[in-house]
Length: 373
Image (cartoon, rainbow, N blue to C red; front, side, top):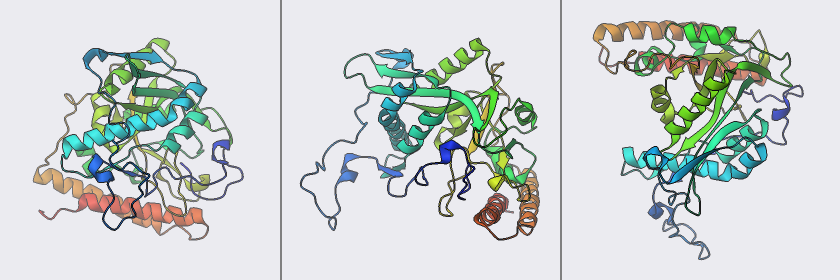
C-alpha cells in the first residue's frame, strides 16, 4: 500500500534500508520438473552444482483425507513463525507448482505466489500472530501447510472499502466471472467498522476485522481455513475476515464464503489526488508496481455470504447482458480518463496517480472489448 516516494513520516515498517519488491523478475518463476533445471547448451556449466537434483519441496507428501498421518498444531509465537519462514515459502511454491502441472501437464514454468521476503515482513510486523501448522507425524516431519491470522491494519489514512467507484478496478466482467459484493452491503459494513489510530506511524487498526495474512497448504488448506474460522467464531473477537488473494486461490476462497470487495486509497494520502486501487502490504518501486490487491471478505458471525449455489457465477452472458456490460465498462473508463485529466504532473505521487488512473481505465476498456458485437 506504499507509493514509492521517500516519506520520512511513513510507518516504521516502511523505514527499511532499501525499497523492497516482492516478486523479482529473476525469481518469480519456478521450474516444474527436474529436467528444466538442466543448463542450456550455451549456458555456463558448473560441475559443482548437482543439475539432476530434485526440486526443493517435491518430496513433501500431499495431505491425506482427515489429515491421516499428519498433525495440526497451534503456533502463536513470532520467533517460531520466523524460524519456519523458509519452509512456508517452500510450501506455497510447491502448491503452485503442483497446481500448474495438474492444469497444464506440458507447462515448463509456474508463477511463485509469495516470496520469502514478503512472508518474512508479514511475520515481523503483523500483530497479533495466531495460526496453525500441519506437519507429517513421521520423521522428518515435513511441513505440509500453515495459516496465519492477525488484526487488519492499513497505513493509509485515505483507505476506504467501496464498491461505488471505478477506481476499485472491479469491472463488469469481474462481477460476472467471480463472486463479488454486488449490492455493496458488505463493504458498507466494513467501512463502518471501528477504526483506531490517527497516524501512519503506527497504522490504522480495525479491532473487529481479522485478516488471513498467510495461508498455504498441500491438500490441507481447506482444513486449516475451516479450523481458523471456527476458532475465530468461538472467540467472538472479530466480525469480519478479510484477505488479499492470489489469482490462483480465488476459487478456493469463494468456496469458503469469501467474495471480492473493493478498496481504494490516495497516494501519500493527498486529498487533491484521485483515488486509486489499494495495494495491501506492497509498494511502488522505481515507478513499477505490483498489481492492485484482490481483496476478499466475509462476515464471521454467519456461515458465509451467499455461496456459489445461491449466487451463481455466469460464465457466458447473453448478447443483451454483454451489451450492458460494455456500456457500463465504457462509462467507467470515461469517468477514469476524465479524472486523469485533473491530475497535475509534478512529484512522483502525482505521476503514479496519473499512471494508476490510466491503468484502471485500460482495464475497463479491455472489459468492454468484444469482437463479436
